[in-house]
Image: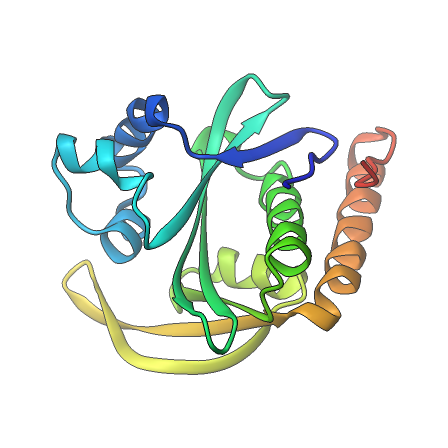
Length: 196
């Protein structure tokens, strides 16, 4: 069962979520995410996407009210207990710590509920902000795939990161505490707690 964070709820994709997914897909704000992770789809394919059996799709909700993001868990290697993860946070909601909070909720479910051993995240080398966030969350760099993606008319490298079950909870807790301390210093607001 998925737990809730102090601000966010991560829940399984439902058929009525297709409109939100379609809005993100057609907005043009997330070309790398949808081209490289999801692929090209028409409206009917978007409707069916979240319910496909070869992946787990989750919606990130703020205060259980509005959808602010999407989490995909895919490319399962069942014998090795490994899967890939991709997270999209709505552009209007970025920079608020939602990436870390939703990743913490989801990894707790995947590692403790589903008994996954290793989670992998592939990031374009050109996406320095996401690469920095992934490292802050305790992921380690595993490999660089040369010219693996095609972006704006050029081939770019893809950096593969991973996190494993034994260290995930501790690493994510440290990252969360760092984020809360940074927020408290910057805004003077009280720290958030992930204990739910």
